Image 1 (cartoon, one colour):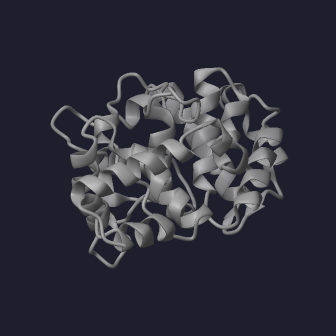
Image 2 (image 1 turned 180 degrees about the horizontal axis):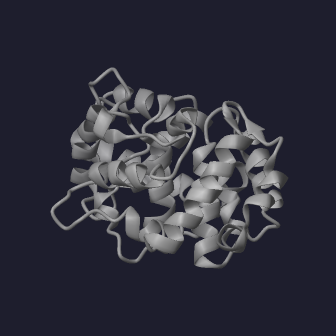
Image 3 (image 1 turned 30 degrees about the horizontal axis):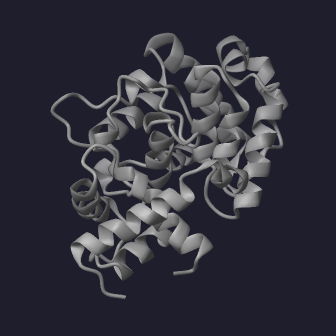
Length: 256
């Protein structure tokens, strides 16, 4: 299918409108943090859900709900107030290669980040000179693992400074930063700018982007993210990542 630049933008705008609405929530892991109203609960539930967001979506949703149950459906309170003995309740949790030891460290580290680094919104904020989140995510990973941890746990936080596409963290940032006008994303990180967001690049969005000739790089890595950024920011400089809904919907729901 061949589009002019104008036709392509109009096509993606149409598909974005089709999928960026509340009906999207029912089949997506974003439903987990829609269970909460408190800012810290939303951002913690979102971060933990994004961390396990690979594989079968039903399994992701079920296991994310299980994490919320293990924290008594009050993730911020659990993280802020837990003692080491409380971490025993997490034993037995597993989502693919993310197991209870990983989850226990994540809980411990999040408590440290809220107590000593002002929380997730502050740590992941790019500085004014940075055009995207590459350095902010790299810095976040450094801070997240400054406590003693198992080496295996590090693989569960991506690092775009090492050319990872960081799909799950970019998806998480979309959830927290993009506006909430349609009731899907949250827009609760007011200190952040949606203009700096990058598309959560995975096999679905990557394949569709290549079919539409807005991505030529074959690997789904940070270089590909940067290439895709160029076109999406041309189409909407203020909210480029709204097109994630179009690319994802075309790939997953329409098998485009």
